[in-house]
Amino acid sequence: MVEFFDKLKKGLDKGVTAVTVKSKEMLEATQLRSQVKTLQEERLRELEELGSIVYTLHVQGKLSEGMERVQTKCEKVASLDQKLREKAEEIYWVHIKAQEALGAPALPVAVCACGAPVHEGTKFCGGCGKPVEKSGSRPEGGKGTGGGRCPKCAMALAAGTRFCANCGATIETETP
Image 1 (cartoon, rainbow, N blue to C red):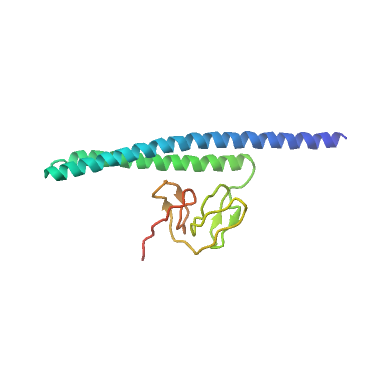
Image 2: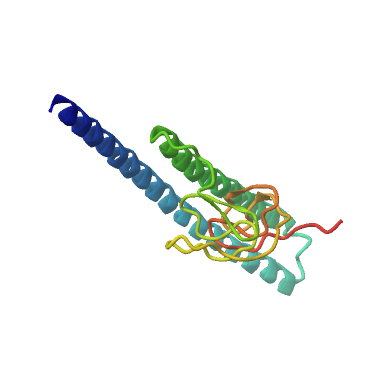
């Protein structure tokens, strides 16, 4: 009988720990995604302003004279791009830390038909770009050849990635 209660207590402790870790992960990821959305909106405003400045200077025939203003705006957009990359990296590490806290390796939970790893929480296959269904079915597709960061959401990409696992964007690759 004592063993039963010990097992029950361990099971409850494990469940409480899992709920606590997952709740913390969800809260942190949601906060970071909110910050990402704000940064994306600010970036869009800056790009619109940049376009307006360039067009106005072009119409006035003063494009070469206004390059300092254009450069300043370009630097602001580049700064926002860097912040977006950092936030995407933070979100990634929030998920990794949660997996580690639960004792689960941050390894793929499945392999796509194209051979690319499919990680927990992945929305799109990083190799072929097909949506990953929650039912556990795997996308179909071909091999990828990307890497680096997603140009749309700035998520870190593994080598061989052709599509972002976070947003599904196509990753442009250089041809040899």
